[in-house]
Figure 1 (cartoon, rainbow, N blue to C red):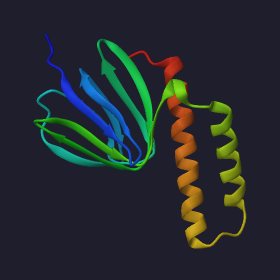
Figure 2 (tube, one colour; figure 1 turned 30 degrees about the vertical axis):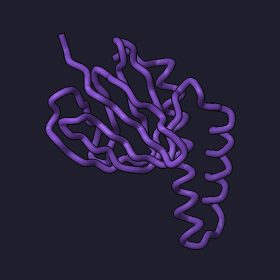
Figure 3 (cartoon, rainbow, N blue to C red; figure 1 turned 90 degrees about the vertical axis):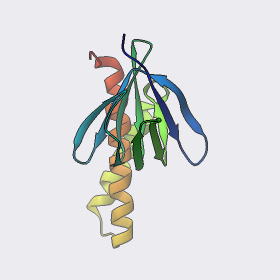
Figure 4 (tube, one colour; figure 1 turned 45 degrees about the vertical axis):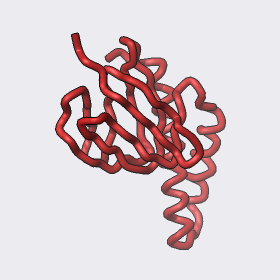
Length: 139
């Protein structure tokens, strides 16, 4: 029987998740990373992406914001600016946020406004992808 690994997902506002899971699949800039008990210690950047978590044989998806993932013998910790379960995502609101950001991108923007707009697009896209994964997840 597979041993569980401790997973903590922390945001500045709250402890989003703290419990035992069978495994996770996290998206990093280098690609998807599957992690189970006994995984080699590592640290990775995460950025507005989908996080899949298997808990008690059931897969759940979360949209996570920018931050870091720390994998150690003690478990997996995410320190991210936002986290939201797929079932809690307001798809219509995310679609509107994506449209607004894409429209802003067509205009003349300062460098900082451009970076903020790209971040808004990445966040909205991650939220929509996560919401969609809830309907199609078959791992």
